[in-house]
Image 1: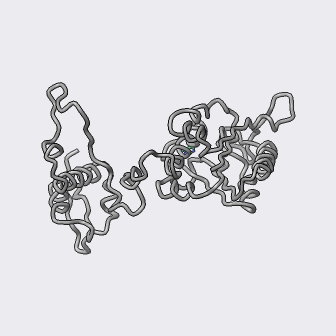
Image 2 (image 1 turned 180 degrees about the vertical axis):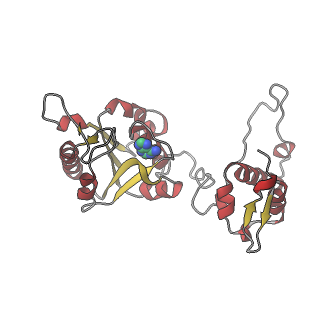
Image 3 (image 1 turned 90 degrees about the vertical axis):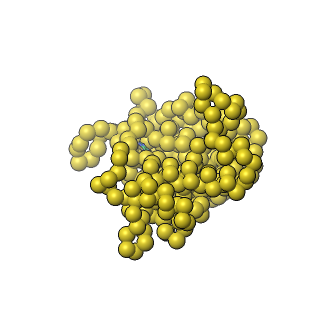
Length: 273
Ligand code: ADE
């Protein structure tokens, strides 16, 4: 997979040399190119922003540096044999970045990221490139960062670990919380490793029992409990046909009740925080 990132802070992308993404690069599984947007400015101050039409606070990133940078990035990529580019524009007003979207992006051969600063990029840039390639405007969460670079790191890491051969164990993302198709997208429960006792704290006996069926049941119960506590929205979205007797007991203990249609809702009146 080829990745291009155009940014006014190339040094912010240094973590792409480290850990899983760094190793994928070193192995040739990821071909990463980071570009300085200011290389496509031609005035003395290397200006990339200007005041917004219509007034208001902040500055807007100008069309010309982005247009020239993207034209050149595309030309260089095609010349280097890349194909099928997708433009990924991090913005708090984008669609939520989910595991499903990570899987979709991991299947594309070429991602071009345009992390913005200030109030964002002049709309015409996205409209222009949308005539030539898919444009994904993505938000990594309901909070506002100072710029899109951290979002590029998040998206890249989520995508890179899905590429064939990048994670050591091919099984390792099948069980991910949020893996598409995972039963009800349960969050993963707690995990333990040696030593068996630490500061007076042991580990659950069942994990030492060697009984695979019981261990699987325990893991599911823990995942279920955690999901109900931290992400009630995921439980509410579930088809209740996927819940077994034990799941229902856990939900009931945690203050959930089935409504007549069968879906589970949290009884807010008797939930302890
Ligand atoms: N830029 C600023 N905030 C962002 C967010 N939440 N997601 C993606 N890009 C952003």
